Image (cartoon, rainbow, N blue to C red):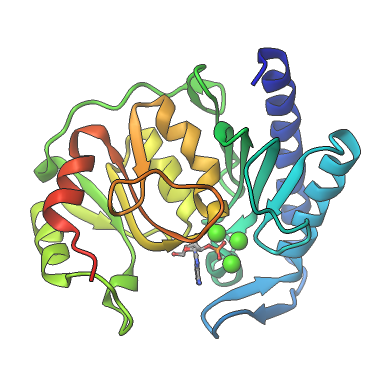
Length: 266
Ligand code: 2AM
Ligand code: CA
Ligand code: CA
Ligand code: CA
């Protein structure tokens, strides 16, 4: 992507993400309509839809040729990553948003000709924004995040959620148990975007999950690349920004080891 376009898109996305956060905060104490999607545990609110519509309107107006892939489907269906695609999760961690009123994020990834170029994750209630442009470093607010240090697995904090315990699990759970035992500890924050941001920040070392959509990881992708971390599917293959996938994101020094020794998909 041309340098000046990358800078313009980053600046606009940064501004719009902050405005979206403001929109959410202003309505924080107003009762919300909460609906369910695929299951009673899969929530969506009117605010998820309002924030996605807010981005769609901004993008349509400023960049009519760009495509928009959002979780709540207010944009058109996107089947390929040609051109410029904005991948949007208006509220990542809706369960936290509804039940905790904190620990959720607005997440945006911008893909150009199949390559992730820009990523932003806004931790709304903490008012911290993680952002990155390909080749130009990752930042938390205006502070550049350092490259991640080398670590061994027994020094690592691993972000894992409960999904691998569910009846339809597709993994060898004994191997995952060994990983949990080997690691120094585990964490589960309930927002994939924040888990990736914390990994980029170096306050956790890996994030494993067995079903994510492109909008869950697109905002974190460039952030991770810029600090030298890696995000692939659970077989170590690149993610495609279009389909549901397993995800292993980790400090590069433990990424392959986790995949080789601790993950066996059934
Ligand atoms: P969401 O809040 O935007 O739906 C919860 O552990 C994390 O997984 C959240 O980032 C959540 O995103 C994401 N997630 C992906 N698919 C999900 C599903 N079917 N049900 C609940 N959370 C899901
Ligand atoms: Ca959701
Ligand atoms: Ca999400
Ligand atoms: Ca969401």
